[in-house]
Length: 273
DNA sequence: ATTGTCCCCTGTGAGC
DNA sequence: TGCTCACAGGGGACAA
Image (cartoon, rainbow, N blue to C red):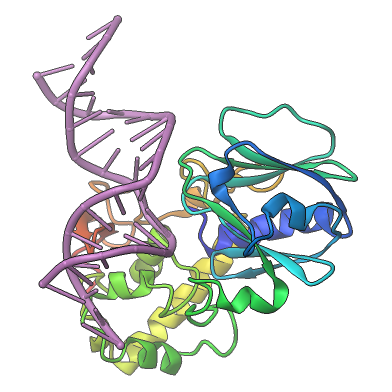
């Protein structure tokens, strides 16, 4: 569930705690979540290294260490990175603990989908998934023309295309539904069918909803927490996601949910065309 | 090359 | 009350 605004919030809440901290030890409780590099094991790579800074790309969090190493973390659905200033007991879903010279970083993940990889910083761009990532929607360079170009030739519906991280980076099920509603575009529209004006509305809607999500420190629909264990507030501002059967805030009609490309889309069939 | 389907996991809640 | 089962959904693997 962590999408761009949630990962950005994790990055921001983690940065102050982690920057300049040194990794003194690593405990892998469920080793399946962690991957080293070649012959080098995960804990061995990390131990003794100092954290220099944190970066986000799409839904990936990059933790840069000294000596040319980086961690590539993806929370998938239920992953959490939690910082504790003092030693903290592990919970049933704690998959690993990074012991720092000051405090601890716990990786928790109910569903065991999240992953943290240790890679040479120079090889970050080769990590599968990161390599083909589309543009960052909040960058200035992400314009209606860029969006239209990336949707050109697509045979899928708009909803599926926006969820494709190679088209643009960082949107998940929540923010695609919200952006499409704000742009008054149907998720069922063929992705390549957007007129210029519609691409302008959608681009603006994507940027707005992501910015609002970050400002609200993310959407805690169920599992999401930031690095301090706090919920976000954006679930209060959702206009369509999770509201199937309820009334459209724009026209008063009934919101419907429909399975599109294996994902549930919620939208207003009257407003979104 | 692109697209669709299944799978990975566990907790939750609806229905019987 | 207790059981079953669909569902949640990001992305990788694989087939078409």
